[in-house]
Length: 132
Image (cartoon, rainbow, N blue to C red; front, side):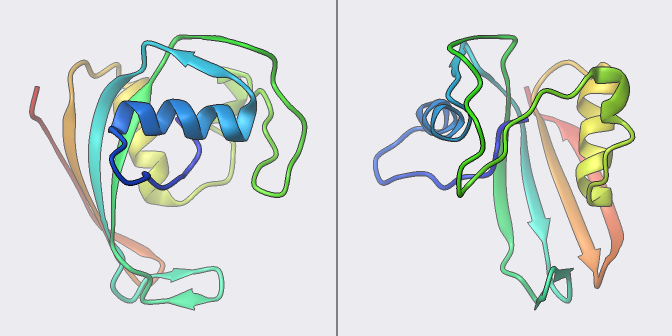
């Protein structure tokens, strides 16, 4: 999954993911494809020291090839390689884990619309439907 970032005015989703990934990792993605459009409803959600974070609309892309060399740590990111076998043991928010499990470990093909809703720190709803 690509690192989090924000789209610039006039930029497409594909251009954004390529730019953000390059800025944060030093790698240039080749042929990323859209996998999911995810809406995170964050009412009453606690993220770090913030409560009632704004809602997010997130595009998730997948790419299987790249060029370049992984860069070192910066103020924005600490890029690293994680073995597939170790990835499931990483600490992450429950909604993120469900999304990764759904898209990659359940081997779902296509593009999906996903709804993730939290109530405080508890995942209240995770719904998905194939749209393409």
